[in-house]
Image 1 (cartoon, rainbow, N blue to C red):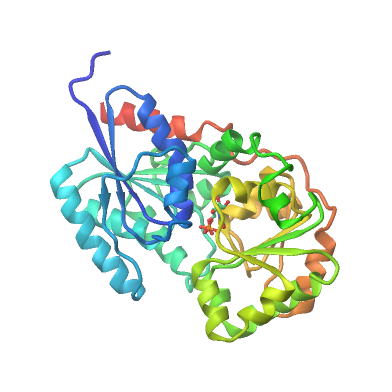
Image 2: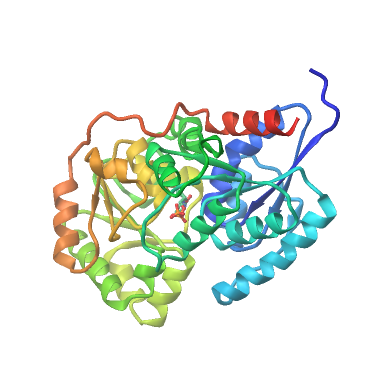
Length: 368
Ligand code: UDP
């Protein structure tokens, strides 16, 4: 079929997990004749090791627009993004806007587009924690409400949208783009060399920890419980913790960074391939990240989720993931111990590894 015009998509990206998710979709756009993707980087994550490293490693072209908006309160950040993105959309006049996940960049992109009557495609739609105190929950509910295409990664996500009354034709089960990324890069990563060798870590004999959610970083008692459990664990097994910039700042402000550095392997955020190596060969992963819960499962590593609830319920049901709300250190420690050496049931909840291709195909067919 001969298309009349080029289909133009503006992608809004701004935070680490979005760069990773976008890598496979951007590659699928690039393979598709008649498509033009214009990438806007809001600037939400801006450090070289939170942003540039992913564009380099995952072979993505530099974003066409850099809005350089970060810091400030949620309202200020989202408001400034809304203004910046609106200007870009007025200039580019795309056929659709693509957003990922649940950050302030996601919400700002969606709102700017919807007000200009530009249809929005939401990748990772339908996830719910049912915890309205999470900024991410607010962002994702509002984004879903005003998006046209709801690309859901799991059956649970589709069910949530059905329950909320969305029309069946809007709910598009394509699988999880993070599964696509893991299939693409996971195989390449080996236990020899790399970060493991330089840190003197043995495959299968260390714990990997990541903590960045406000509910833990901004709650002194919860954070203390997590830290105590990790310090205790480190007596018998090394604990590696790539510190999110916000987490590092809090440990510094509270005067704990120096002592902790002598007890745990506290490192800077790492690139994606180093992270995959750390994940793939960990004995257990302790995290409050959404993406890392799934990556643990992709590499068949048991996971302890340091939260009260999770959006990725299928992993808890199948026994790959344990919820350990950090209400006391002993409970976190017990979950870590119980996870060691454990395996879950065989499941396949995240599609076939072709989510990116399906997303692009659907947009092409609806916009042609
Ligand atoms: N990640 C990384 N380096 C790090 C920590 C995380 O590359 O030091 C990757 C991780 O592998 C996953 C993504 O970042 O693909 C998860 O991002 P994050 O935990 O910041 O956000 P969430 O998934 O909770 O939205």
